[in-house]
Length: 337
Image (cartoon, rainbow, N blue to C red):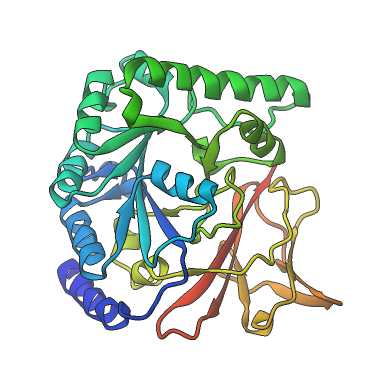
């Protein structure tokens, strides 16, 4: 059944692959491969191969995270159809995926938490294994020392949290720098659990790091380099028609007012400045329920009908492009304390 679905999606995608893209990148996040113990973060290697074949067949360029960040920092436009493959945590099951990526000649980026590696945590690659990943075309990037959330702890003042963030990030970077060859590392971070707020963004920016979350959406040149989105991939997502929709997704224009993800008024309000296609935008909460819309002069305000649940949440907004089967996509991460 899975093979038939993927074949159908490949046929559909090839039919639209000749349409010019919009100079944006889609970043995918994976965790485990052929490990059925953890279905929410697992992907079969056979499906992963089919995804790589899809990228080849649809003339995608596959870059590393560092190549993408360098292009953004230079201010140059992206070519059409760029994909970045990231793998979080460096579980041993990723070795099969690394072999496939080497076979296809695709670079990839692995985010590691250094404390669990130094403690020889079962299921994780050790430093020698990670150096082997470098030889296969991977790069080793920063996922904090202890994989702890960087959000505020109860009663934690801002200066103390800023210091904790720096210790987690800089401590991990020092270990990576000491264990991994220079050409296989960069100052790029992924937030544990995808959780961040304005203070975390500002602290990482001041320290010279780009950073990825886990909210969905393509990346355009105007996105914050400390709040970059990625599409999470597992088996159920890979077998859905949404996989191709997201791979072919296009960014919104630069119309999003910056929002701190920490929710102080629940439900929170998402603000978009008026642009020609604004009336075609549909927004939903994480459960798929439509958001309420209100117009206030030159801005459109979107808000969930009911309060968000405690913890991680998101709003997703889309509108159809002028290109068949392609949609513009925007995702806003929220966290309810």
